[in-house]
Length: 186
Image (tube, rainbow, N blue to C red; front, top):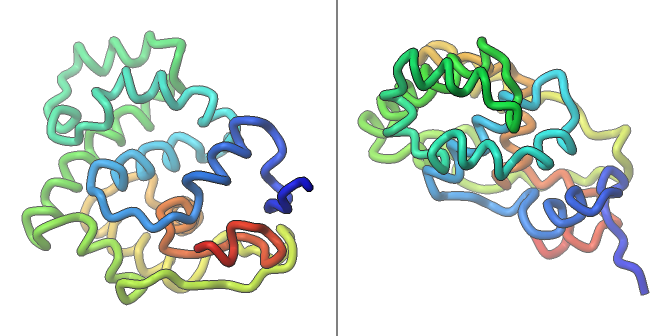
């Protein structure tokens, strides 16, 4: 019998991501940074496009090592702008470097990025009860608050919609449709 999944999970990479990662609570700072980077690059594009290029992003951005990324110079940025394996958007690449620096400042202030970011949901996953994809919002009061605070801390590509997508990916929000097999597991 075929597993019932969220209606957006149709392609093989989408299904693999849906079944194994999307909505699983993440508390590892490097993984959280990876989702921040990927969600920023996804703005204006499909998630499928990002998933296809994910391994290329890992290689290009030193496995999402924010300490290394914070030290990228113009030569490294120019190299990234020539890398056809990733999204070659100058603003997003420069934004990733800027965000790595802001990420480190948050770690220094709060002890970990995890501790800081999960505070927007009181430290536990918000469980929604959506019957279909059309019901799922693009933002929430939590993503609005997160966006406002990240921007205050000099993050770029941290609008409320990007923050909401990040929260879904990092398991801060369970937006699996209620008939999806992952809904109850998470």
